[in-house]
Length: 300
Ligand code: ATP
Image (cartoon, rainbow, N blue to C red):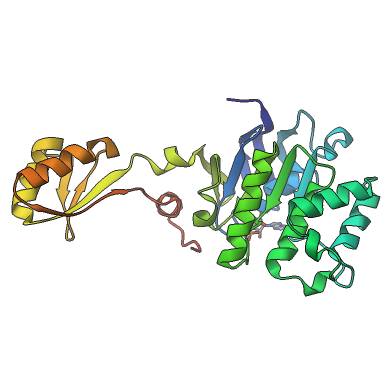
């Protein structure tokens, strides 16, 4: 794996007897989009707050860009959007970023660069309060982008957005990663981020359940087939893939094999004299995997 930009070992945060984050060991590789996923209250924000030095761990360690969280050497290298940006409603988007840039000793050029990259250059002189939620979130990302940090830590950047706003946010995050930023984002909307994440860490009740690529997490795909008459199709399919690999379900035939088997299955069904009505690759959504893993109701 490429160099890790974030590494935690046994990271833990207790509030009284309750462990909001419990022994989390995760790593984010430089250049990737890492999705930190879990239902509400799982411990995502608490973890991210520890990574940026806003709160101290009760136990364990975290290293961000080679330093301890909050180390002045690293603060400039990370851009953060946690728990909604605090912008002034009566200032324009541009002036809001100027305030932040001044505080961080950055120049007007940095502000224009950030506005441009989040697609707000045209609306930069409008007051913040007139912005749509999507624009507000993008300005938040713009604030995180000031000074072009290596690592962006975005807490629930798609939260509350409509489908169009979400699509724009996904596009923006993908573009930022293509531009060389590492992105660590959290979400409880698994279906909304699974397409853009290189890897994900799934957290539930403070514990990291798994860390892997989206493909690994979903496991091998299966095939689903509908054909008529099923009496002809089913034995033909079984002859190709083996008895245990094909199962008859209420709506068709499920085949626990990869897409490589699809052409042979299709040929066998047709050769047996059945009509092939449907043959598709059935990948589990991350939502389903997550649900199986946590047995918790999560928002879709
Ligand atoms: P959400 O998506 O709702 O923000 P989350 O995964 O970010 O969820 P956290 O905000 O990290 O979850 O909260 C994890 C747990 O820690 C929750 O049970 C929360 O109530 C608890 N918690 C967080 N901060 C504190 C605090 N300052 N004092 C006491 N408990 C806290």
